[in-house]
Each structure stands twice: as structure tokens, then as C-alpha cells.
Image 1 (cartoon, helix red, strand yellow):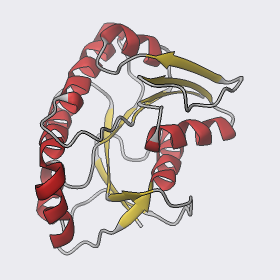
Image 2 (spheres, rainbow, N blue to C red; image 1 turned 135 degrees about the vertical axis):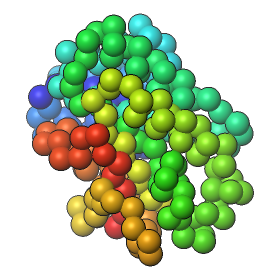
Image 3 (cartoon, rainbow, N blue to C red; image 1 turned 180 degrees about the vertical axis):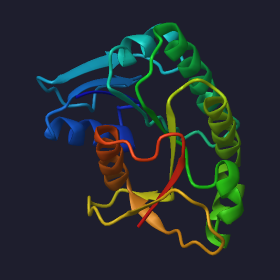
Length: 208
């Protein structure tokens, strides 16, 4: 199948590109920095931005699934995630794009904020508050659009190995246990979900 990975230059996105190619998929990778993405005969690299309509349309056109994996190290106030959401809504409408779009936000965005443990609530409050405000707005924009969406909320991310023993939880429950998950395992979930979408129009928590 043909998979578009948006935010493919590092982290979850880069892991997703690598794993999708290993499984024989044709991949289009969009990033503002493509230098770390290895060349491959099944890969098309686009140096561009997910907030630029022409770049995003070029990347997702004719794809069987789109995986939005953009992240940022900027801890100050940002509109990156909501800007991507707005661009995505416009791009999919103009293309009449109906394939599934899986969007990474994070556990702590939207309603999941109420289910954070004390440690993660403190981390987000002290270091990631502005990011999560904008990720929540991103979710709201996507959910209230015509996009064929799935919101994926990983818990605390690590650079650990692929172990494939994570949990995907489509419901928020009082007392639910959330820990850590490697970026490689998040990528594994994304590729598998692109192949066989189980949680369309749902919010999914990923944890170990």
C-alpha cells in the first residue's frame, strides 16, 4: 500500500518510514529536514512543511493512509499542531481525500488530561503545557472536520527498542495505568493500523 508519513525526519516519523519500507510499502515522507531519512527505491522524500498546503497535498495525494507524526522540541507557546490540523482539513477537502488519517498527539491532550498520573501531570504543567494546549486544539479541529481521522495518544515516549508488547486502549478509564512507550513501538502501531484500521473515528491511548 501507499503510505504518507508527515513529520518523517526524526522520532516516531523516521521510525515509521523505516518500518513501513521494511514491510514493502511505498512511502512518501514529508519533513522540513530530510537529511536523516535513508534512501530507498520505494521511498519518495519531500522537503517541505505540513503547514504548507501545496507540500501537504503533494505528500498525501493518492495515499492509502496518512500518518501525521510531527513533533517539536519547542516548549514555548506554539500553534504548530493546530496549524497542521487546519492545513490538513483544507488539503483533504480540496483533494476529496477519503483515506484514513492517523494523527499523533499525546496522552494529556483533550479528555485524556483528566486521566494523567501525578508525575505526567507535573511534567506537562512545568514543561509541555503550551504544546498540549495546542495539541488539544488540533484534536478539536480534526474531530469537527470531514477527515477520516484516528487520534493516537502515546504516553511518555522513549528511544527504547521495538518490543511489540504495548497496549492500544480505545477507552479512558479511571485508574488506568499509563507508563512509557518507545517511539519504535508507536511506529509499529501506526504501520499496522494503516494496514488494518481498527480505531477509525476513535481516540487511542498507547502504553506499555
